[in-house]
Length: 335
Image 1 (spheres, one colour):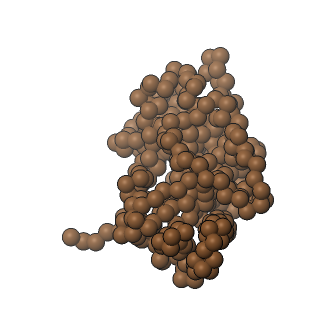
Image 2 (cartoon, rainbow, N blue to C red; image 1 turned 90 degrees about the vertical axis):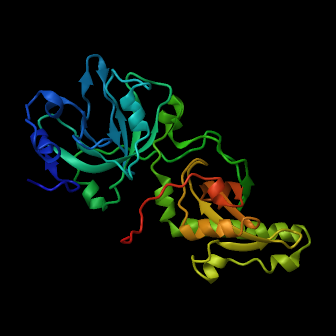
Image 3 (cartoon, rainbow, N blue to C red; image 1 turned 90 degrees about the horizontal axis):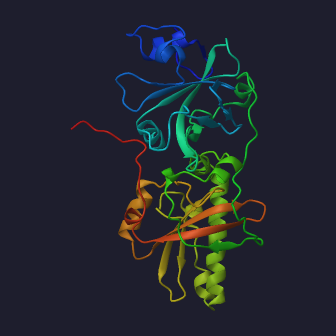
C-alpha cells in the first residue's frame, strides 16, 4: 500500500483500505464506493472528500476548482442546507484537532491524487441546497514543479480586494474601529464569488518583509504625530525595538504619547481584511498583561504594497481580555 503522501494516486478501494480497512469495500456502492463525503470511522470530526471535477447529481452540476494559492471551491451534497448538522460541523471544523483529507481528479476512470488536508476558510451564508465552501489546502506549501504535475488546470488566484478599496497617499495609516464579524459567519454570495482568498494569516505571519514594512509605517506615524505636537524631544526617542533587540522583547516599537507616557506597540500586518487572524507569541501576550496600561497592538490590514499604506485598528491593554486565543501546539513535560 502506498503511503498517504502528497501527490500519490489512489483508487477508491485503496482510499478505503487506508481509512476503513476493517469494513468491506463494494465497488460503485456504499459510502466508500460512491460517496464524495465520507466520515472516517471511530474518528469524530474526521472526513475524506473524494472529488471529481464536473460531476452532477440530478439537475445539479458541481462547480469545483483549486486556485494557484491552494484554495479549494467545493460544494456539499444538494440535500444539505445551512441547518444540517453535517454543514454546521464543517463550518466549525478545527484543523488543529480534526482532519479533512482531499482526493481530487479531473476525469472519470482516473485514480485520485491526494492533495493533503483542508482548513475552513469561509462559506456562502446566503445559498444552500447545496452549501458552498472555500477551503485552504493546508499542505499546499510545495514547489512549483509539484503543482505542474498534479494533472489538472489550476484556477487563477483572486487576490483580496476590499469591497470599498481606500484611496491612499504614500505612507498613510488610516485608523478605523475594530471589526465585529466572526470567522465562521461566512460571506455574502457576491463576496464569495468575487474572490478566493487564501489563509493570509498564516502566509503573512511568515512574511518578515511585510511585517517590517508595517512596523516602519507605524514607527514613522508615531514620530510624525509627536512632532506635530511639538514634542521633537520625544520623537527622537522613539525606538524600533524589534530591529535593535530582535523579536524577544514582547513588542516592536517603544513610543510615547504627547504627555511623555510610554507606549509599547506590537504591530501585526496583513494584506487581507480586518477579520484575518494573526499569530501572537506567549511572550507578547504576557507582556501585554504585565504592561496593560501602556500596551497597544496595531493591527494593520488591507496593506497596499505599492503605496506602503494601510488601514488599522488598535487593541489597547491586556490582550487576553480582547482576543480569542487558539493554541496550535503544546510543550509537554512528564508529571
